[in-house]
Length: 320
Image (cartoon, helix red, strand yellow):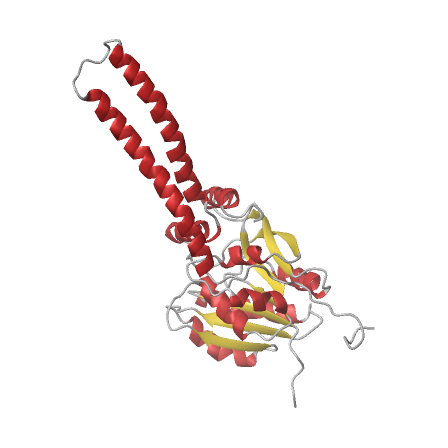
C-alpha cells in the first residue's frame, strides 16, 4: 500500500551524539502527536566517531515515524550535513535541528505551524536566552554582534541555530552549491518571507559542543569573504586616508627642511618616498581587490535574482 505524502521533514546532523540518541528519538515521537501531518526524520551521521550511527540503525526501525539514515564518508561539518539532509528529505516543510537537545520541541512545532499557513517561507529560531556558562554566552554575543555588523545586519542578535523552510526555498538553497560559505548566510541572501520565533536555549545534557573557537573563527571568515567586501573597502580607505596624510606630512617635512629644522642629508626624500610608497601600495591593492571581488562574485554562480512567486492569468492559464 502506498504511503501518504510526507508533510514535515526534520533534518538532524549527528556527530558525537550517542548519549542523546534515545531522548532525541523520544522527542520526535512526542512531536508526531503535535503535528497535523506525517513526520519524517532525516539523520545524517557526519563521520561521527562514536556509536551514534549504530544506535540509530538499531532503534529507527521501531519508531512510529518515517526516517532516513544517511552516512557521510567523513566529517564534512554540520552545514554540509544539513544540505545532504535537505536534498534527501521529502516533506513539504523542512526544518533543521541539532541532536544535542538544546532546542525545545515546542520550537519545531511552532515553526512548522507558521510555515503551514503559507504566510511565511522561512522560519528561524531566535535565542531570547540560553542556559549556558557565562563565558559561552559572552563569546556568543561578541561573535554575533560582529557578524551582524560586518556580514548580515538582518541576522537576529542571538544568531540562528535552527531554521525551517518550505520546499521552494529548500530547492533554491540547494542550487547555491558553494564551498567555504555560510548556509545561514545563503538563507538570508535568498530573502523570501521570514518569521522569527523566540526561544530559550536549553542546557546541554551530554557531551561538549563541537562549535569550538577555531570553527567559529573559520565560519566568521567564510561569511565575511562570501557575503561582504568590507575588507577591501577598509584597505582602500586606509590607502586613501594615508595618501592624504602623506601630503600633509610632506608639507610639514619640507617646511621643516626649509627652516633648518632638518639637517640630516637624505632624510626628507627618504621619508617622503617611504610614506608615499606605502599608502600608494595599499590604495592600489584596494582598487585591484575591488576587481577581484567582482570576479569572485561572478564565479559563485549565484543567480542575479530569485523569483519567489510566478503567476499566470488569462485564457488557457488554468486560473479562474
